[in-house]
Amino acid sequence: MTATSMRTDRAGDLRAGDVDRAVALCGWVAGRRDHGGVVFLDLRDAGGVVQVVVDPDAATGLDAHTIRAEYVLRVEGTVRHRPEGSTNPDLATGAVEVAARTVELLNRAEPPPIPIGERVEADEVLRLRYRYLDLRSERLQRNLRLRARVNHALRASLDEQGFVEVETPMLIASTPEGARDFVVPSRRHPGSFYALPQSPQLLKQLLMVGGIDRYYQIARCLRDEDLRADRQFEFMQLDAEMSFADGDDVMAVIGDAVRAAVVAATGREAPPIGRLTWQEARDRFGTDKPDLRVLLEIVDVHEVLAATAFRAFQAEAVRGLCVPGGAELGRGRLDALIERAKGLGAAGLVWMRVRDGAELDSPVARHLTDDERLGIIDAFGAQPGDLLLLVAGALGTVASVLGALRVEVAHPVDPPDLALAWLVDFPLFEGLDDDGHPIAAHHPFTAPHPADRDLLEHATGADLLAVRSRSYDLVLNGWEMGSGSVRIHDPDLQARVLAVLGIDESRARERFGFLLDAFGYGAPPHAGFAVGIDRLVAILAGEDNIREVIAFPKTQSGTDPLTGAPSGIDARQLRDLGLSVIRRT
Image (cartoon, rainbow, N blue to C red; front, side, top):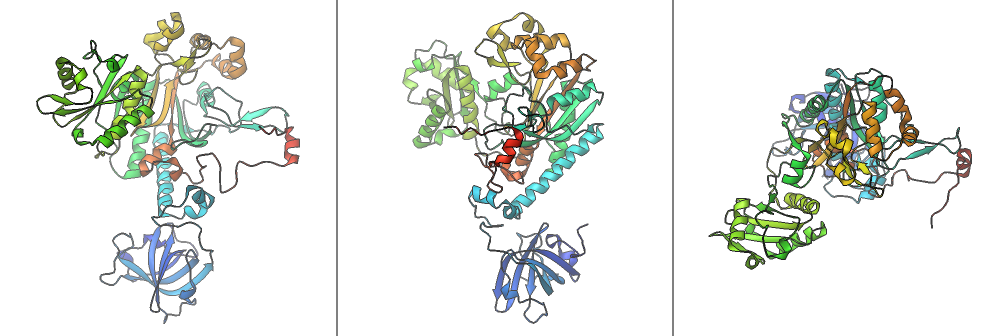
């Protein structure tokens, strides 16, 4: 129901079936056109826009010629068909208009400092400074309503699967989550600080110890990290945890919830969710968050070139891409790809055009033997007219460079426009610190792969980097939607992992002793996941930046032009908190 004491309908909801009905509407003036006395108003509200016709002979109670953009009006009138030839197919209400009987001015408005509902893009800082005006645009109205549908679908799916929504606190102790905390000084305990949660990770594990069995919440999380298109200081995630469950159970539950959100957002059947190992994704797509709408795959030609005399290909890895029909690219575009590869960390990039007769047109062709040229063409399964792009160097660099290039050189993606996949068997550790201890890739409570337990027990140093974890990520269109894992519930295994990480018992108790204590009272096997709602909604809304699906986001530099945050606080507040500000020079 949208009717209130002031209106019978929303302006954007009127259709041909409402013709001859008397209505009362409220909204903002999105446009005004004066046609020789008759004034046409575009009245906008949360439902959309409808045309209102104000005849000077009608007793409207207000001179329509004085009405300006963004004035707030109440209109009473009758819905009628638009005259033949004047319908607007681009407008949901384009077949009808409202003949005004009375027009009441509810409030005047200053000329807006940014365009509203126009195709002209305002400066981002200006948009955020006047976000309350930006929110009136059809784009943000649509995105925020889509976000609400997604949240509802996620909640409904987990409710139906027996989960209980539990809110966890915003003021907690600082815990090792991998990013910088936002901290809050305590007035009651001078010199002590709360941390704002980077995630509810430890708290939801305590809920499993507490017998909640199946928990979820749409949780607000905060991390003091550099901002980018898919990252804000504060973000929302669907956070879930299950007892007596493994990773397959969690992936099934979360998969159902995300697919329900896709249906709610698009009205179309959700795509199936594939599955890849981390190693397979790196080998085939060069990244652990591949855009599977792009069909190009990386090809390993190191073996073909194992005995090559060409120095540039005498490297740890030689891999490449085959771009169908790409031989038509001009030299300027090829030079740009070379510079792009260098910018991504490669020493260079070799291009080869495949010609008729299994010939290669390339600046380096003369440095290769006939067998090497034929071997390259065969390895790629290349056809005349195709373009080959080869990168040589360290394996990690080659993979990441080609992973980026495969998306940039691919043809525009055809439907299906959504590609979901689970990635599994991630490394448990992502590298070594200065003391030679491995660094946890996820968090120190992630369970190792059962097949690698012996390696965890006996390996040291870099050999530990081969240990796989029982973690899993959900990837959509090249964006990481979230990650999760089976947790360690065995105290002995937890102690071993902490020892490998270089965290001794006293330090472990200092940082998360409350969790270890809880595990001593009977922790069930449990696993969980968290879905990044901002990212999910951005993709479903067709946006490239999560700021466009957040009501009040920060700028790229982390400021809020609307409220002026971050800002200083007065001397009295500092005194009450026992703080002083030291200016960095």
